[in-house]
Each structure stands twice: as structure tokens, then as C-alpha cells.
Length: 269
Ligand SMILES: Nc1ncnc2c1ncn2[C@@H]1O[C@H](COP(=O)(O)OP(=O)(O)O)[C@@H](O)[C@H]1O
Ligand SMILES: [Mg+2]
Image 1 (cartoon, rainbow, N blue to C red):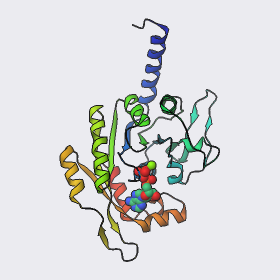
Image 2: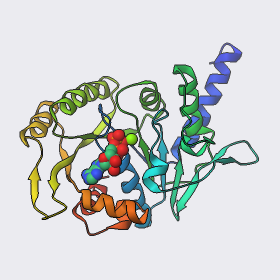
Image 3: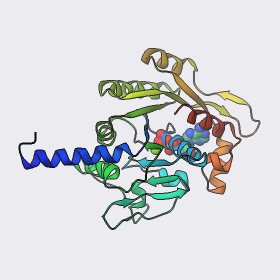
Image 4: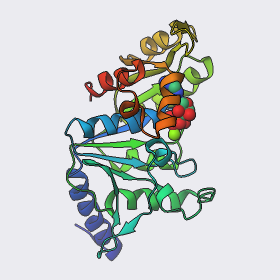
């Protein structure tokens, strides 16, 4: 029973949030302790592929300081609001709605210089003051580590499941290991690990080259008790082609081993 106006206000907000979240379908956080391991590439291409397969997908970028989703999807747009003041996510292709702070910035090189409370408010607003349609999947691309943005999302979405992206590099393993313990502490469900850049596919001869010791990710899986959901190759040829035609990988080169790996990963969601 609320005793003050502040309690009452909080209770109303919580009910509103629960109502909005219930319409977003299955919610996945694409997460890692490390930057540059492929979170944005994986979340953008998973979302694109799911939408092309007939699912209704929301894709939210909570990387406020290094937002990349618009770039990964080659999606140039400006965010607008509806008559109730709610943000309108951009429909990138039929069935895929994207919200990234990149679409709020008027200048591409503009930096977001926000601190804790402002970031937490922004994330809450992206969830609940946004006109998300009814969805099957809601994917969240996160910044590296366990900062305000990720903690806010974990706190707000109770039925969130994490996909942990890792590479076999020793430093990535160490950072990801810490990030997993944060998820465990906050009792966030983890679906498993995604090993990105597991091998390099040589763009010249097509041969597979082992980049890191394959034992590294296997050892992390064993230590954390997590399953390796997929191993995605480092595929510079596919990445270059996608860049050339300005489309996400799964659209630009659907037959490439990287795109195939992402599509197989989508089956575990
Ligand atoms: N498997 C891959 N094959 C080729 N390029 C990749 C692969 N994974 C990531 N990249 C490239 O590496 C860079 C970093 O990936 P990104 O998805 O932005 O990482 P993060 O979001 O974790 O910081 C990007 O330029 C991306 O295109
Ligand atoms: Mg990123």
C-alpha cells in the first residue's frame, strides 16, 4: 500500500513499465565484458535475419557513448515522437524496429557526455516512453562491461536473457569472466557464450586460420558452466562486401560462413 505521493508515483510507473515490457516478447541482451568483440555486428544481424524470417523484432542500442547500430545497419534516419511524446523507433525493414541514440544526434561526430542518472533515465525512456509495437523478439545491443547502461537494463527487465559474446583472446576471456559473474550476481539468465572471430577465413585463399588457442573459450565455458551456442568466423571478405553494398552481412552475403553462423545462432533464441 503506497504511503506517499512518491510511492504512489513509483507504483504507477512500475505498472506502466510492466505493461510495456510484456508486449516486447522474448528479450535478449547481447553482452560482453569487452569492446570490439562483435556485439553490435551480432545483434544487428540477428535482428535483421529474424525480421526477414517473418518475426517482429525490436532492436535497442544502449551503447550511449559508442552507438554503432545505425552504422551496422546502414540506417540513416532522425528520431521523431508521436502525439503523446513517445519516441518512434525507425522501421528499418518490415518487422524490424530500431532505436539508437545515433538517430537523436544532429551531428554524427557529436559525443554523448552524460553521467549516471541521466543515462539511467534515458535507458528507462527508451524502454517505456517509446512506441514499441507488439514484438516477438526484443534485442539489446550493449556497451562493453557492466556500467550504468547495462545495469539499468538488467534491473528494469526481469525476464531478460543474456547472450555473452567473447573472443579467444586472453584479455577478452578475463573481462568476460568478470562480466559473467556480474550477471550471476544479478541473477540474470544466460543462454550461453558466442565465440566470435573463432577462426580467420583468409580472404585470399579461403583457408581457415586459427587466431587464438581454441582451449581458451572451452576453458571459460567449463569454468562458468555455460554452453558455447555458436562459433562465428572472422570473415573479412564478407565484411568488406557488406561495406561495399551498404547492407548488413546476412543481407549482403547470406551464404558466407559468418552469415550462416549468425542464422544458426538465431535458432537458439
Ligand atoms: N566475425 C567477424 N568478421 C568480420 N568482421 C567482424 C566480425 N565481428 C566483428 N567484426 C568487425 O569488427 C569490428 C568490431 O565489431 P563490433 O560488432 O562493432 O564490436 P562491439 O560491438 O563488440 O564493440 C567492426 O568493424 C565489425 O564489422
Ligand atoms: Mg558495439
